[in-house]
Amino acid sequence: MTSSTETGSATGTPDKDYNLIWYVEACLSNALRLESYIQDAERGKDTEVADLFRKAQADSRKGAEIGKKLLRARLNGG
Image (cartoon, rainbow, N blue to C red; front, side, top):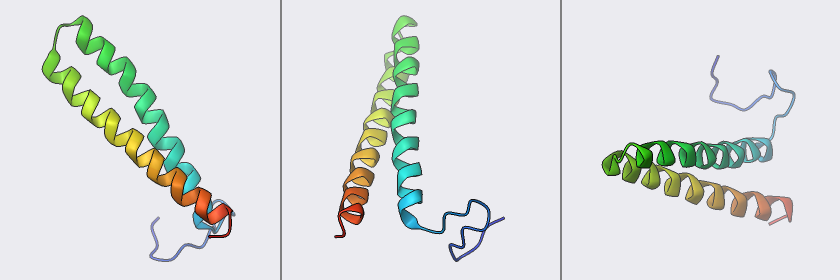
């Protein structure tokens, strides 16, 4: 079920701060998971796949940092 407006009917949390918290957690979780995938690829001597996962991990870390910055600003009233 998707909607163009944020209602919070399913979670009871109709605010964008909750969404940012989720996004940051998802990015950080993804970065952590990708570390295992990188190690698997390196053990298999597959540098092409390891490089792909490193790039994806960097993107996840960047997303987390951007999300944390936005969340910090909103929680500080800015």
